[in-house]
Amino acid sequence: MNQKNEGNSPQRARFRPVKQTIRGNVPSKSNCYKIITLYKQGKPHSSLGKSDKLRAYEKSFFLQCSRYRNANIDGPFEFEMDVFYPTNMSDLDNSLKCVLDCLQSEHVRAIKNDRNCVGISVRKFIDKADPRIEFIIKPIETNV
Image 1 (cartoon, one colour):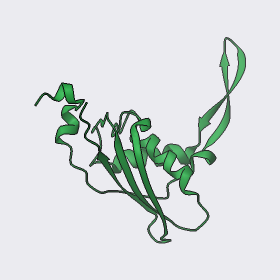
Image 2 (cartoon, one colour):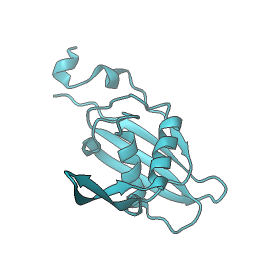
Image 3 (tube, helix red, strand yellow):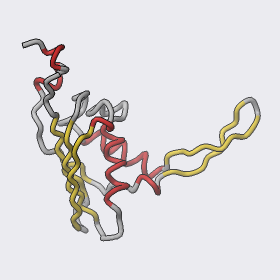
Image 4 (cartoon, one colour):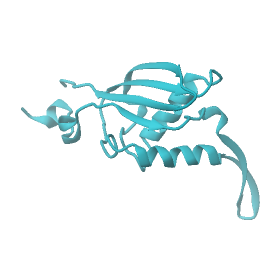
């Protein structure tokens, strides 16, 4: 069986999906950016920068994401996630974007690109004492 012709990477061929838990309240991506002023050749330029809250969550995510770190899943995958918020005030969609960005960050490298996600299942729960996410990434084998 030729892995190259099937589009399978060596990482995907030996990868086994497992549940990963990341403790902490996942921030909403839409609320985690601030306008910053950069200077290029002495002229001010506005840009978006990450908030301290988002930077802290990304660091915590990296430290906790041991099961998927450097998995480099480069083909199609399905993503399942349970989000446990401390209150009912958060939106699932913006949290999902934050988690997928963390998974493809240069530090975690669990997935090559979130555009390869072909299926998503996300559920919302309330756990005031222990906010967290629990997720599984399931690579999809392709026969190309």
